[in-house]
Length: 302
Image (cartoon, rainbow, N blue to C red; front, top):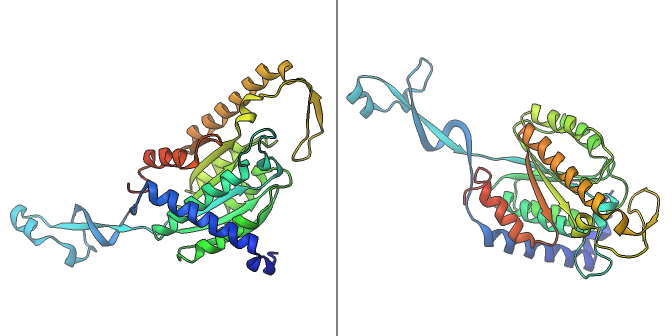
């Protein structure tokens, strides 16, 4: 249960304020605008004509067109959508990794800013957004809301989380699938360093429920390159045993294995119509997010 005293903790309040400034500046610096729904209904803006059918509202007949063509045509309209999005953030131990040699942010800090920016974006567009924190189970769930003030609840959750425990994405996704609203959106932010063998099954289940799914795969450059030299002791951030070795002995094989894992996850995603976004924490977040949003013009209107 959330500690009520954390609402007044100066450090928490400072982190919330910093996250809000970062998210606001990042999103406002990238885009403005509001996306629209593909579903047609009576409301905001004319979309197209259709032939009149019994049961159509007479008030939507275009009489000028009828006078010219001797046929009745009904106007259809496009309405602004209230998308409902749930963001799942992996808060397992491996997400806490940061370089032991260089100053820089951890994967969880990078992910924290990403989630804050996406949440601000959706609320700016009057969409509903919620946040679920998980490791091998759901740690915290903040239901989707569309009020601007809801951002404060999400930022508080992001500011007070701690990265610990093991990762079990498959169990969490399977448990959430039945609870999520169909035709909504699910965004999963993780390093995908998990022993799960069948994430394909979980993603397929989500897609079968009509959910749009986006994966943000976040890794640190050290995890891509294994740049260490000499005898090194690797301590697990989750529950794996400690290993001592000289990285040069396995570097080439390791780099091949991690690239194969990335390629496999991308292939699974493409096959299911899931958006896959790889993010290297050495790339400034605003640059990475801007590139993705400019590609995804169906997500927002640039």
